[in-house]
Length: 415
Image (cartoon, rainbow, N blue to C red; front, side, top):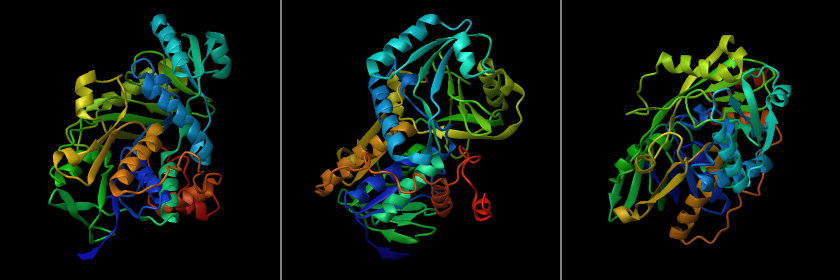
């Protein structure tokens, strides 16, 4: 391998990694972003694409809910065609606990999440195919995010401000000397040893493996979840079942399809795990309880994603339905002074995760620069075709929005 030198190496080209690279580049830091595959090829591109209002976890994590509604508003301002403003409904079906509905509404009010309560008939006016068993619903400012576009736009802005962005560049090893990462061997498109001043581990569910290369523990507890996209035209708002988070309780609208999700099953290896048919069947059945026509809707594609959950938090809180907060792990305490890992979190809060991480990096490097990512519009935000061009350039087309993001061939043909 040849040798090169950069200041900050960001490992992981999902939303958080691309967001960190963008934030640092806008502060004038010299950045290289690498991912072993195309950008958004991990968790970001295999999500259900819900832009949270914060209502889903508001009872168990009010601080996280406040972060979600704040970042929801930021992304609507800066992300343009990466976001579709649909609104959302939390629906209460016959047999669902009405006290849970009331508790969620009260928690939303306390967190600053606006709500409107609809009776069953009013809810069916908004969604004519909504189940007759829906007794009432609560409207919240959920939306849809197209992660392939979002990640690519962040990477493009990072590059416009001097960053090097390398998909298909796997990290193959690290050299740690005198309490610091002295060198990182990167294969594929880079095929070089990078000698960074600082390293950001934003590898998501794979963060434990990256940390191990530097001799530090990043205890991850990934879980898999299935998403199924089916043909269904005309759903307006995101649908959420108003109960404690469980299997098959989200329906996310696209143009002529909807994404049904999801399950939560622990996995040992984020690259090698079983996919069970019962997860698909359960997701269909539970989502059809809210929107009956999806039970027989033609299936377009099915995929599983892996959540980058942090094990100590999972152990403390006890599993599904708890916080999806993020954790910034400064490994100086473990003897590696120029390495930070950022894990957990949600796609909705990626920008805030990136800002927190960039703050730490700049503090360690003595960089005096303000975060600008909340106010600066992403490049191409008002042009779907330009965003899709970035996606193609970074090989970032993921499963979550494959029906929305134009393929290179269709774009070249004027599609």
